[in-house]
Length: 286
Ligand SMILES: Nc1ncnc2c1ncn2[C@@H]1O[C@H](COP(=O)(O)OP(=O)(O)OP(=O)(O)O)[C@@H](O)[C@H]1O
Ligand SMILES: [Mg+2]
Image 1 (cartoon, rainbow, N blue to C red):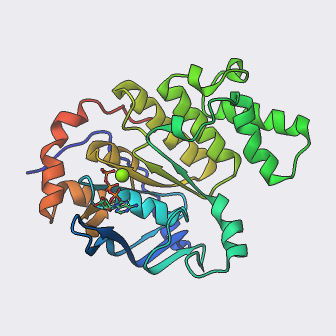
Image 2 (cartoon, rainbow, N blue to C red):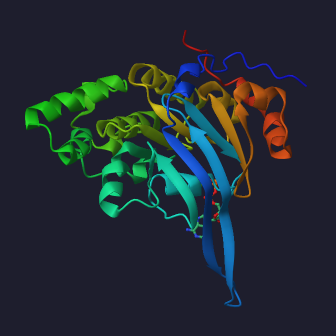
């Protein structure tokens, strides 16, 4: 069966494949210790030998069933969890093995955005304070420069300057996600990991944020690792798609390969749900 997705990402960044990878993950393993009801220790392999490469300015989507290890992968890449084994090469440096001092310098370059930005945006701060915090951490700017930078970040993500004095609790879900993206951009990351970042939003708002991500990729050359249950959105945003099942990547290829020649049952299951979901997809911006 041949699926047609008119809004497939077409401007695959072929040129970027001649550049060194931004991210190279080799045989990543994450093992969680679990205590069973009878008190015996059990081990759960959340990641079981995951390998892939992401080139600058491209998007790798990671799709897969619940519990397949997607968020564990995101946490290891963002240095929130230590992998049990394997390597994560970021711009040629292994962030698993480097000394803590070097890891601290690399960490801001990999930003993670979650499904629910409310959990990471301080409700007692105003939008401006939320944006000033990462700018203060960069220790480069005067207060006036930081304010200018904050307002240009708001403009970049399509938020009105009228929001600066408001707390994030007074923003809609889509506006909060735009704010989370603006705050991540304030640290000038090279890699943005989006873990189900669109999943809680209405279809039309998902489409707007997806288009914002594409616009930021063409204007700033952003690199994304886009984690989702939604294969249609993965096709819309990604150059390559990795399908995960039980801690492994069971299939990895271009969106076209995944759609036209799915090799694994997990991919076929995701594809069976696709025609229903494509109705919600935004039209591509030319
Ligand atoms: N801190 C933890 N301690 C023990 N087990 C964990 C921990 N975090 C995740 N797991 C387990 O690791 C496996 C992978 O979980 P993970 O959250 O990475 O899946 P996921 O693909 O992100 O799922 P979902 O699509 O539901 O978000 C699951 O079996 C989960 O129960
Ligand atoms: Mg998850």
